[in-house]
Length: 131
Image 1 (spheres, rainbow, N blue to C red):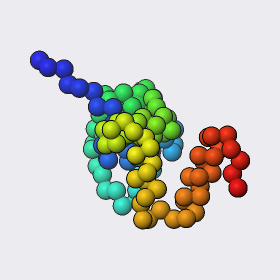
Image 2 (image 1 turned 30 degrees about the vertical axis):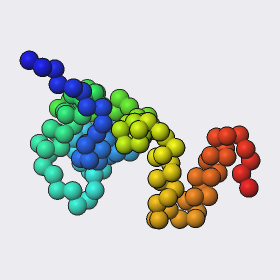
Image 3 (image 1 turned 180 degrees about the horizontal axis):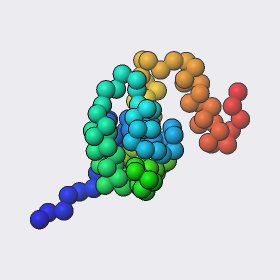
Image 4 (image 1 turned 45 degrees about the horizontal axis):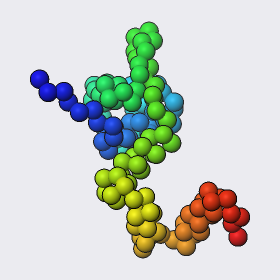
C-alpha cells in the first residue's frame, strides 16, 4: 500500500485548535474547547477527533492524566508561522520572498502605519536606525 504523504500544514479547523492550544500551552479536550470561539458549537467527540488527528500529524503529544488526556504542542506558534511562510513563498511566489513582501505592501488595505512598522522591522533587521 502507498504511504500517505505527511501534511506539514494545518487545515483551517486544525489551526483554530492549535491556536487555542498555544494560548493555554496545552490542555484537555474540554479546556481546548473552552478556548475556541464562543459561537463554535462542537461536540466533545468531534473536538477529541481533531486533537487526535493533530497528534497523528505530530503537532501534538498527549499524556494520560487520570480519566483524560492532556494535549501539548510539539511546535510553537512562531515556528509554525515561519514554516507556513516558507511554504507560501515556495509554492505561491516561486521561492522568491521579495515577491511575497511586494504583494503584501501593494495591498490597498495596508495602512500607512502598517507600512511604517514594516519599514522599521526591515531597518532593524538590516542594522539601520529607524527614523
